[in-house]
Length: 78
Image 1 (cartoon, rainbow, N blue to C red):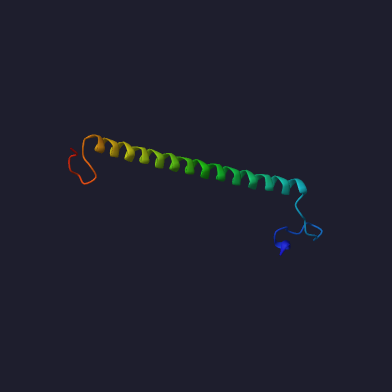
Image 2: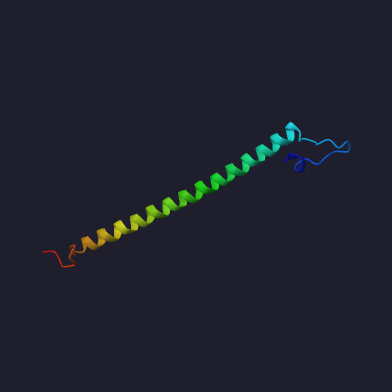
């Protein structure tokens, strides 16, 4: 299984990557995951702010509607 990942060297022995190479690869994967997570957080924050804005607009619309003297049934209030 691992022989296909690490081709044989001139002596025919499998060559394992160095500790430094594995460490760099792990750091690179961690960095990519971190950036992906940060992008996801940015998308979630924008969605939350859009939701808040839409709720704010609905609240303002309802207040204006009620301030103009129309009740829940759509009839003018006395």
